[in-house]
Amino acid sequence: MKIRRYNLSLYIAGGIVLFLAALLFKPFALVGAGERGVIMRFGKVQNTILDEGIHPIVPIVTSVKTLSVRVQKTDLKADAASKDLQKISTDLAVNWNIDPAKANQVYQQIGDEEQIVTSILSPAISEVLKAATSKKTAEEIITKRTELKTEIDNSLKKRLEPYGVIVRDVSLINFGFSPEFSKAIEAKQIAEQEAKQAEFTVQKATQDAQAQINRAKGQAEAQRLQRLTLTPEILQQQAIEKWDGKFPTVMGGNGSLPLINITPPGQPGK
Image 1 (tube, rainbow, N blue to C red):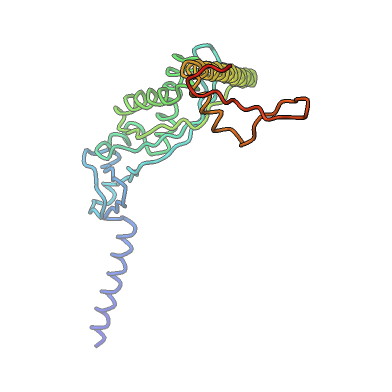
Image 2 (cartoon, rainbow, N blue to C red):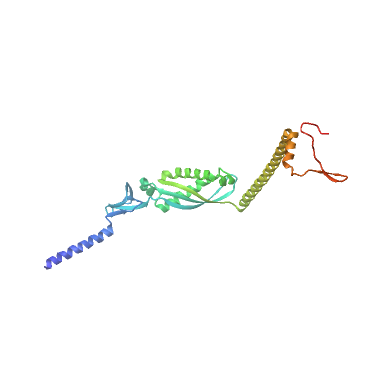
């Protein structure tokens, strides 16, 4: 009975030792969702990349470094100059991720995500931005913002692709100029708005004048046509239609007398 208890105690102790050894030496590697595992044997990066899940490894000999391959957003500030030598301060947001198929190469050549931002992403953004803005004047940078964004997108993607970093999108959040230039831009916009308003006022006055001329021409033409179509018979007919039933009167010696035209139709009056 004592022997059985002794053996049971040995088994329990052995299990605890194995469990503690497993926790200490970690004979497995856990790669989470959205990650890739970089295998290192005695500190040397191997070609094999671990996908998501649990993977057995040889403790002490092998270690695993996990890198996120999800899309990450990095906010950056960069200064540049325009073609007309105006100083520009820019806020950008870059969406990027590590190429899952090159996770081991990225870790070997650059490092983890933080080192990617400081060593590769920030310097590349600064250089690409300066190259793009130097081709445009400050006014063109404002008015052709979409064109500038496309150029920065394409240049940054080509620049970071060899490092195993995929650039998804670059957002130009804000452009800042010197106070003097900002005031000049504001004054120009106000002047353009005033010029457009003055032009609109002139066009409206011209249209109103032309409309009055057209109405006058129409009235004159209507009167001309009316004179051509009026005949004595039409005038007499219009007079009859407008007659109120009262005869006009003339003053005679004995008072007023109605004035009646008794000339038969077709005969000249006497």
